[in-house]
Image (cartoon, rainbow, N blue to C red; front, top):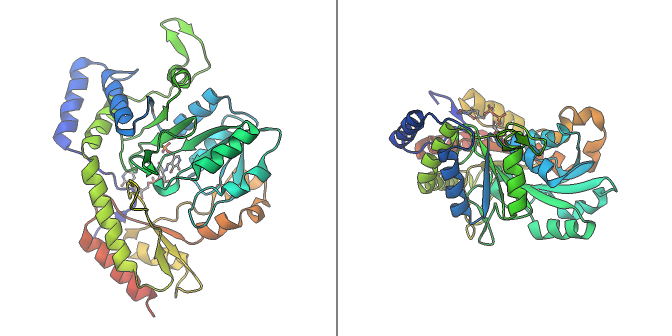
Length: 372
Ligand code: T4K
C-alpha cells in the first residue's frame, strides 16, 4: 500500500454540519458544563437506544470510574481479562481490585461458568464487556449477581448501535458505559456516556461528573471532572446523522473480508449474528497456528511491512500488563481461554476510509502468504 492503512481511522459525518454546529457554539460562548449541545446529544442517544437516562462523559474510562463510584463498588470486582486495559485500570485507579475471569474463546466474552468460583466476601460487582459489540451472556451474569447480591454494569465501549435479542445494548444491567473515542464506531473526538433506566443512579452520576455540585456553592458528593464539552457533542450529533452510512460501510467491508479470506487455511473471521443489529466496527481475524503456514505475529509483521497496520487487540490480556502482572504473576494459569485467544487475534483496518479494492488487495496478500 502506498499509504498506511490503520485500524481505528475515524468515521466522519458531514463536515459542513459539524462546522455549522461549532459556529453556533462559538456564537453562544457556551463551551462546556452541561451545555445545550451536550443535552441534545444525550437526548438523541436516549431516543436511539430506548433508554431513559444518558449521562455524557469526557471519555469511557472516566465513565466507568463514575459508574463504579455511583454504584458503590469497592473491594473486588470481577471482569474479563480480555478487554482494553481501561476497564481494569478504572477499577484499580479507585483502589478496587480487578479480579480477572477467563473468557469463552467462542464468544470472546466473559465466561459466566467461571464467575462464581471467583466470588469472595470482598466481591461487590461484576463488569461484563461486550467485546467487538457482540453482547455478553447478560441473563447468566445477572442471575449470578442476584444470587450473590452483586451489582452488575457493562463496558459497552464497542457496542453502540448493537442489540441482544432485539433489545439495545445500553439498557442492560444497572448501567452501561459507551466509548465515543476517535477510533470508535461513532466518535465525539474523545467521549463516552453512561446509560441507565435508574433515575436516582443517573442523577448521582450527573452530579459526580461535575465535582458533586448540586448548586452554585453546594457540593453533595465526591466528584470529578467528567464533563463532555460542546464541540465533542457537536461531533457526536453530526456523526449520529451518518450512522446508517457508517454501518453500511463497515458491513460491506466485513463481508468483503469474509469472502476474501474464506479459503485461507488456518484463518477465520469472527462472525456477527445477522439477526441482531451490529455496528461491524471490528474485523476480527483468528489465526489457527496448527493449520496456518505462519504464526499470528509473523502475519502481523508481514502486514505492517506492506503498510497495513493491523492490531493485536487485546494482546497479551490485561493480566499480563502492569500493575496486574506483578501483583499476581501466576494468574495466566487460571486464564487458559484468554491466553489462547489473545495469541490468535488480528484486528484488520475497516471503517469509512477503507475501500473494497484495498480490502481485496489485503485478502489476496494473505492468500499468497498463507496459501498452501
Ligand atoms: N473499554 C473498552 C473495551 C475499550 O475498547 C476502550 C477503548 C475503553 C474501555 C476506553 O475508552 P476511552 O476512555 O478511550 O473512551 C485504541 C483507542 O485509543 C481506545 O479508545 C480503544 N478502546 C482501543 C480498543 O483502541 P490504542 O492504544 O490502540 O490507540 P492508538 O492511539 O494506537 O489508536 C489506534 C489506531 O487508530 C491507530 O493505529 C491510528 C488510528 N487513529 C487514532 C486516532 C486517535 C486514527 O487514525 N486517528 C485518530 O485520531 O487504543
